[in-house]
Length: 282
Ligand code: G1P
Image (cartoon, rainbow, N blue to C red; front, side, top):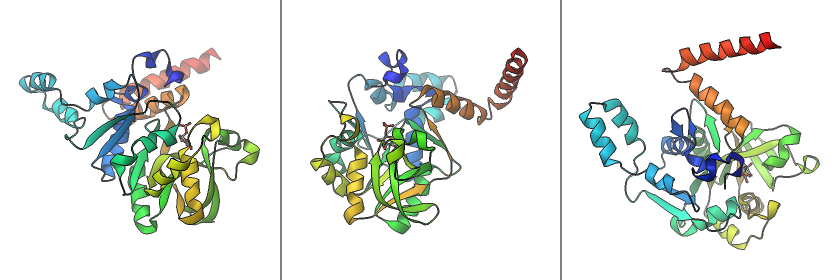
């Protein structure tokens, strides 16, 4: 429900909140496309119709830009267009967790492997995170989750992996716990919001009861697979920003602003001056 970003999220879905000049959801879509994904399912809820408009064509705006010869902007707009039939929107009518959201898509996914991306987790990487995972998955098969080391006191904010054989970037997983207390965390390797999953996980979700926080947890359905199938953690190369928190969102805004050639010089000079002023004030 995006309550952490109220009042902004009273009328804007949090996925439409903007890093520099792109909504969070665009970063997720770009990453999925880079990994070769061509069909998308959005699990949304009440008040998120702005998402549907965002990915639609905008003939009036496009015409105006064309007439004005603003070809660069037209190109940028193209990235927001989805082919008809390649995109579906589903409504989750009760906010009962990530597992339920994924379960809502079960009929559309059908009997094939699928990826899940949580747009709150924005990952800056030379090679997009999901693409790194896809390459590793081609070797391993099974189920794969993005993973990152976190400090023990942060374990209770994440799904945490129980590690089996550690092969470096790929880690075999014996179990997974959603948001454990620091003392109960089986490791410090946390799940980040990128998953490549087998359809069996959807069947597991059918049977699930409410887990941590009273929600249906995707983590529990994947953990079930550690018993009979394979689950891997993948230590991705890149910087993850938790854009579900205000501080993470601000950090991402600064990082993405500094990474933009058209903004870098002016913005870094400004930050530099700000820091100098802060120091002087101390
Ligand atoms: C979700 C998952 C959790 C994962 C996290 C990554 O939690 O349930 O396992 O570690 O995303 O961002 P949420 O942050 O949505 O509560």
